Image (cartoon, rainbow, N blue to C red; front, side):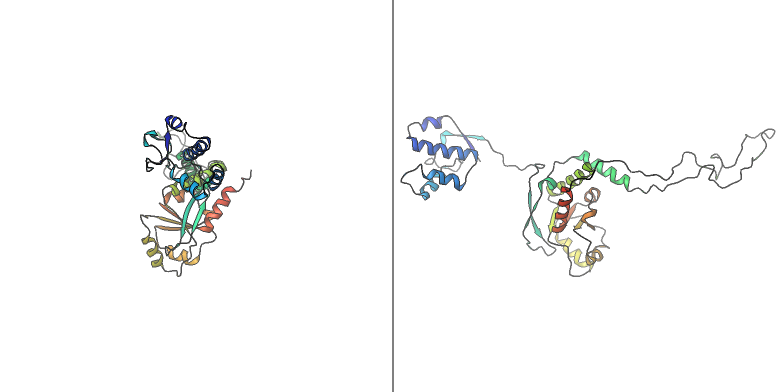
Length: 308
């Protein structure tokens, strides 16, 4: 925890010579600003005659202002308890994320850096709502249809004469008031798709990926290859994962045939290629597993300029 220094520090340093004062000022400024590097240490060596580099380094690192510093390093009464640095990590700062890479056997396969402009964007529920509405509206078939008067099967003859029967006058039996007649103002085949800008669609996918990454529900595998097509293999692998209710697996290219056969009978495991990854599918599954190739393709797709 970084600490601030009161004005009494400079009065206490007033009796020191120039070289000691400049050295202590260097220590304080670097300790408070958090800049500690080998270059800064090497620049201090020349200002301390007769001292080796080990002595300079040892003195530098023992005079950083911390709560654990002893009174010999710096008087405790000159230190303030005011906190000036909060190391809490916030979501949506577009910072690159480092995530471990594993596989179905939970083996260590190194690490992977996730692009901050794709996996660490600010969460906006309004964008997610707009993208989901657009996606659900666009996937509607719109094949609903009803028949009008001209389309209903039946005769066009006048059912009875206009006057003299005591009944209401009618010119056809295909009207909407008769059984088997027409439907007025009924649905006709049409497209339910609504317009949504490509920038908004792309932002929605970034937000969905960032939400899963922030929740710790995004895992990266080296690949999604299975030794066999048996369903019990994928069941055993999924059972070893913690707190998983529904799993979405995303591969870079075409889905492996063994993986497709192993997961087709599991209602809680679905597989998609990277080109088919969408916001609605991510929201339907609480855990997202992506191969290394899928991550690279998604990032490349998000960085591709939008064609107008």
